[in-house]
Length: 204
Image 1: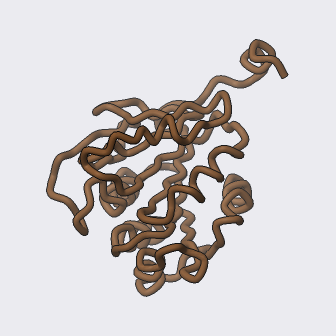
Image 2 (image 1 turned 180 degrees about the vertical axis):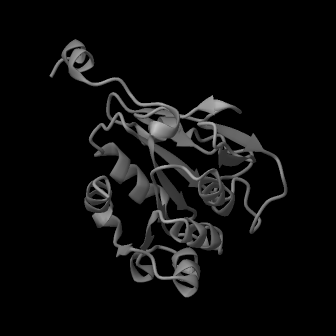
Image 3 (image 1 turned 135 degrees about the vertical axis):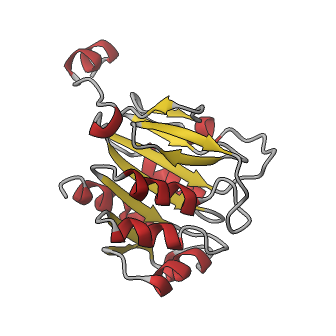
């Protein structure tokens, strides 16, 4: 399909609280599985993905460039008060907490790190629950600390779909183990099941 054929036939992306949020949290050992998943992701104009991956404060690596998303997905590091739009992948910028706001936009915060992490997965996921976002799902992958466990628990308590990587499949199991010690998610998954899981959850 040519570019102009796609843009003429594709429905316009949804915005604000009409968007389904798919939250992905991870740290050490999570980037490669996330990149593989996103590079094969079919376009959904009603879905916005938000990545919270632990990063070095002064990292020169542009995750948005490294992901090389398929057209017409767009990967960006949001500014404060960025409106949430479907068909976008939002990447938490280094040294800022990223939060979902009830009004339908993303905000940035420089409050203290959580589990030595800023951005914090807990902060992002807790903000989704507190915003009472209409449709959202959370996925937690490999990492070396407990960040994300409480946030995932709060998302499940709020009625959102939750999924945690199987610890034996994770490069570093500390993060998924911490979540599984706290609660039982709707699904446990291997990294090669991320696409299957995403497509199934779209219908929930």
